Image (cartoon, one colour):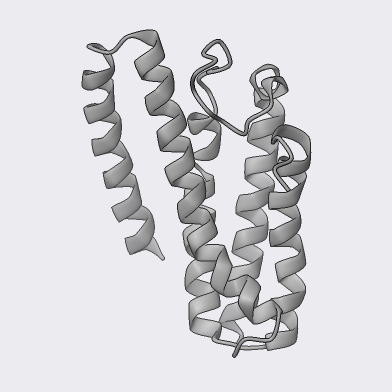
Length: 159
């Protein structure tokens, strides 16, 4: 777990330095487009890690190791959510995003929701580490609920 956190921290720091130096040469619209692209990449990576867990909840073979690992990954990635949602990109009509405009006025709520995702992902991971499928899938409700709470509040309904 510590190795994952350290590696992810190093990668985040390098990306911040690179994007900070590049951002100086970018127009506000280019910065907004880059911010949206980074957000999408983060959330796509979270989905990549939650998809096998969801499959297990729907009857795919249970793999406690994969569930625990992916839960830890989600917890680490969730620490980046407030930062990724800090730049208001609503002024640019030609940039596609599923974020509702209300997100930009509720950064404290975003931070709280991200923390809930971190807490629930860690609880899920801990349950998975026991190897108990019932406890693990029970903890999945909290993990999935964390995602849903934010989506229901701050994301355009695309379904």
